[in-house]
Length: 319
Ligand code: UDP
Ligand code: MG
View 1: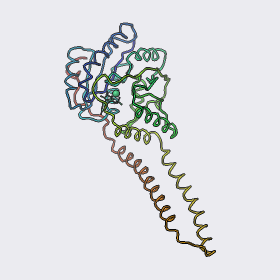
View 2 (view 1 turned 120 degrees about the vertical axis):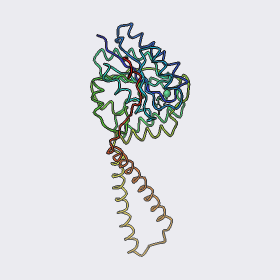
View 3 (view 1 turned 45 degrees about the horizontal axis):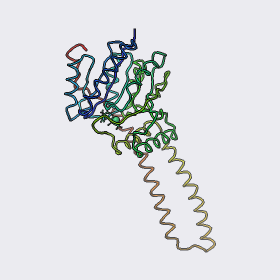
View 4 (view 1 turned 120 degrees about the horizontal axis):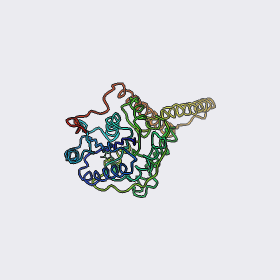
């Protein structure tokens, strides 16, 4: 029996692009089913992430026009990562494999076949990796690459140039469901699940329509979330920095005492002020970083739900 595939597509204010890409997802699904690589029980599952435009209406219309489409709606906007998780968790009881993909047509659908083939040969997780980044602006490209390097330096395991286009089997999803954190960074969590995995390479295109929801502010927030979710090395760096500064200060104290005793003490206002400012700055940054971690602990202890489904298109009828 070929596996049942669910393509999980998060959508937030995507009325411009959804009518273009939805038929493309369906065509890919049908092509794979025709080749006998997936079951014809396979579906395209849209997750409406609290859109304020007509996205949910479009999803509902698609679902009533063709039974291969399914939709769930979140009770409000929760962000891309939570929307993907919601879709994966909704899908996992109903299918053998999931592929998550953005709905803007940037990711090459033909990579899905290679992903399904890799699953057939025994992989539980298949990462879609961008072979090139020339469609990105120079700024986005260099900040993204700097981010991967920083993550690696901090000891966090992520797949280079992989975003959230990946195949995960229902078996791996059952294990992912046991990761209970509310601060989600799926790119870092999925490699921790383990199992046999591989990568397939594809070229990323421009968005087909609509606008990106990831301005610099959100990108920085995601990067920061990624680092603090995956690594406690920043705390270690603070400790090492503190030790180094203490050592230098200790030498400074001896030097000051000797200067005083030999009667050569001079008015050192400028040097004193700079040292105080410098150390004050480092202390504030360190407190900030520690605060970030404490904030995360605070959010985690609340155990709030990571997604809340308000509607499902299959609630009232058989899929
Ligand atoms: N998205 C979402 N919730 C959000 C923001 C984005 O579900 O709060 C979805 C969006 O509809 C798209 C995907 O996440 O399918 C990636 O977003 P986008 O294409 O805007 O990001 P970019 O590719 O520019 O980084
Ligand atoms: Mg995009």
